[in-house]
Length: 520
Image 1: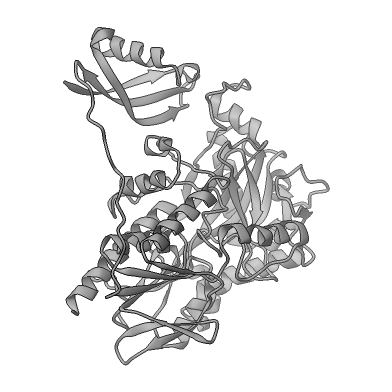
Image 2: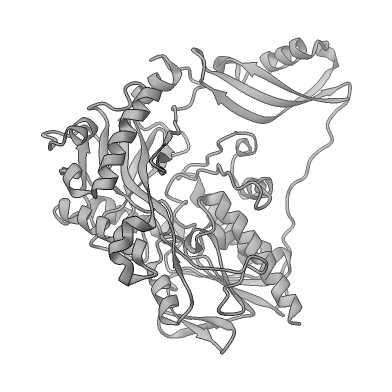
């Protein structure tokens, strides 16, 4: 017999088998010798009470053993009858490629950046020497923005596809099986590169192609069909269809689509700052104690409020993490956050952002469909000027920001290029400043001490999502202007994170396969 139950364990007993079985026996009133197996299916940390506890959802096997589970996908070598061009090798492109292989279709991947190992040199250049490579950085390169920006796998997009399948594919390629049970799974930027390399090896072994340093510079079009792309102004790649999975920062692709008369539309998004605290303060706020149990992770948070129909919220919270420079062009500053798998940095950071609506970019209406993008670019360029045209990001203590005065000193930071004191309360648009102030006050009520002089605001957090959407038909997922073009993932405006982009990649691959078969 199998029973599904929930039990509660204190953090210090989390990894103790005897404590697990004793708790199950006590909860079910079943003798220990009848419990043949206890398999934890979901695990979450509950820090709402005075003492944090773990809640475990378990399958309990009574007088019988579980059957072995096999979730491994057997990827077979593809034939050469059909091929699909995939632009971008982030999670959308990677999982689209794997799914096409399941359909027996050859993926040909074009990535403007470098492979994960070669990419590290360019990350070092921006961190230490303030040099931005527009084709290889924290956003562009093998694995996409997520590879070196934390590896969070939590998503609310559970109705769009098989999230468990996505997680199992990560495990199949080297991720720790804990991501299958944790409520907020996380891989870590030190672990992801090996997993990304393993996925690439699967694609190549099955007959797919991966081309690095291959930036799309034009499209190959017929009257009604998208035939392929031109790379580096010289090489043509054509196929039965094209999946455009370029990520939220490939602005040149938006401009190229517009130049080729393919429709685009502005899209709401969010901008603000990245807020950083000492991690021990967040631990004290969340765990109600300054003593850390070894089985308690660095504490995280998720804060949100709505003021006059405008959202103010934390975004991409990185416990035990660092702030990183995520610019994709030389004269801009963009900040993001990441954590390594152990999340053992002494700092905690998160985006603190305000929703951006059409009324906010109305002054750029003549730039339609790039109105929202122009506002985004303006703030990124402003941050660069405030930092004396370096990657030393403009920053201000949260208390000084609220009081409207410059910070004479700034706290220690995880941001390697360093911080430059700047009057963000004067530089940022008034609607962002006013709403950030309101958010700081509201969030301090939820987490006392959140709004303090130890908190520093670092500008500018601007790449929460794309400000441009590439439209597609609901049923076929194709662009309405050209047959065979499948806009995909975050860059097209249909995902918001690693897993949701991966799910959308699979969905686009399925739509591609259906389109190709219907034209045979």
